[in-house]
Length: 285
Image (tube, rainbow, N blue to C red):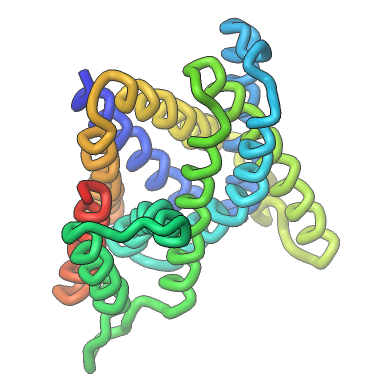
């Protein structure tokens, strides 16, 4: 069951990433974040009410609130990176978020094992190569790589905070609800500020209501992935769950190849692969 839940997590996260990045090419990224996360907040609110999750409210919810402050920044950077660069490069690089817990451990006095040390070196090499440093052909924009790395740090921070925000399944849903509500508030405020500065909240032709199901899917898939991952970690070894769940970039890359016919240069493919390998080594360390 651990493998089943973890692989389902990879599928859901991968499809959510692909959908969010694709939508951000037609709709302002902030709007994608606000609408998709608002749908997720409504669904999570219903789940919390149905399961009595409010009984788990306590000081730990401040971690969920903090995650909600960081989450919109990470999502915005990630969706913009997916909209600007090849998904087959951006998505694997974002899995470097697993390095954040490793960094926290180092600060607390822990020392990485052999697999973690090798994973860090491999992942950094992958970041460099994924930018496409070769003499011919257009490389992936540095801005895209930078935004992806910011998103990765943000995602890793969110994962660490959410892990501290709950100790039970119902508590997890409550923490995710608080996080999503904060996400919507922060991203909504940023969207209003952007509009006041002359930015656009919707495409020139108006809000694409036909995209609402896709926006809802992105938010709900992300929520479902959090739920299946929680189940995976509770039914078996966390290491197994983490490794299998971290394969979601493969889903995003395959979706991009199948639906968008993306073609990566050899060096970019190698870099993305090394970043993913480094992530797996960090997770198994």
